[in-house]
Length: 298
Ligand code: HSE
Image: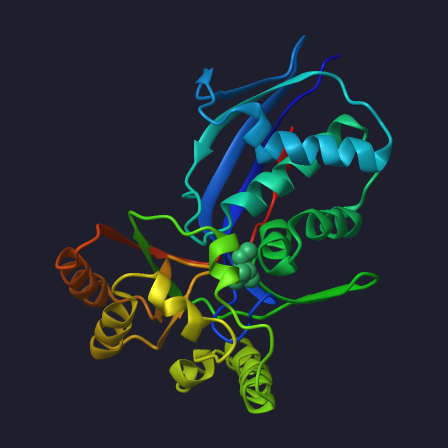
C-alpha cells in the first residue's frame, strides 16, 4: 500500500534575548504538509505549483540530506503545502520548520530508522545551530548546548500566563546578513553579563516569575549590533515598555520583534496604534507557546 500522511511543524522564536544560539521557543505558527507516494517528485501549495523552485526548496534539500545520511533511497513523493503560517526570513524559524519537515518525511518513507534524538541531531547538523530546530521538534521552550560531538537539550517549565506579542515587519532580514554584523570577539564582561542573565532568565521562566524579565533579556552579544538593521526597533521597544510589557527581544536573527506580556488586549491595541505610525508596515499577533512540537499524522 502506498504511504500517505501529514506533517505539522511549528514556527519558533530563537535567542530570547541573552540565549543567543541556545534558547528558543515553539510558537503557534504552523507549517502543515500533506505527503503521498507519487510517480514523480512534486511540490504543491494548496494544489497549485509551489512558488519556490526545487533547487531553493529546503524541504526537498532536507529530504535528500536525510536519504544520504540513511544511505537509503525513498520512493518519489508529492508534497502539498496545506498551511504555511510561518513568514519567510523574518526570524520565526521558517527554514528550521522546512528542515525538520524534510527529515521527518524522509525518515517516515525509510521506515522510521531514526528516533527523535537522532532526528534532532541531524536537524542541528543541517541547520548549524540548535535554537530553532530543537523547539520546532519538541515544542515548548528549550535550552540547548551543542558542539561537534555533543547535543544536549532540556525543556523549560512554562506557566500558562505568558503571551508572545509578535511584531512582524514587511521587510526581510537574512540570518546571514544579521550574523555578518556581529563582532568576532567580545569583552569578558559582556560574556559574563549574558551568562549570568541566561541562568536567571531560565529560572524566571521555570518559576513563572517575570518581575526582572526586561533586565534579563537585555543581552550584549547580538541585539546591540542588530538594532540598526531593524527600522524603528528602538521606538517599538520603548512603546512596549511604556504600555507595560514584561520585556522585549529580537526574535531569532530578526527583523521580527517580540514583547512578552500577560494576556492584555489593551496592550495589543496600543501597540497596534504605534505600529501604524511607522514608515514600514508592521503587524502584531498575540501568540502562545506551542507545546506539541513536530507531528506526523497518519
Ligand atoms: N540564533 C540564530 C541567530 C537564529 O540569531 O543568528 C537564526 O537561526
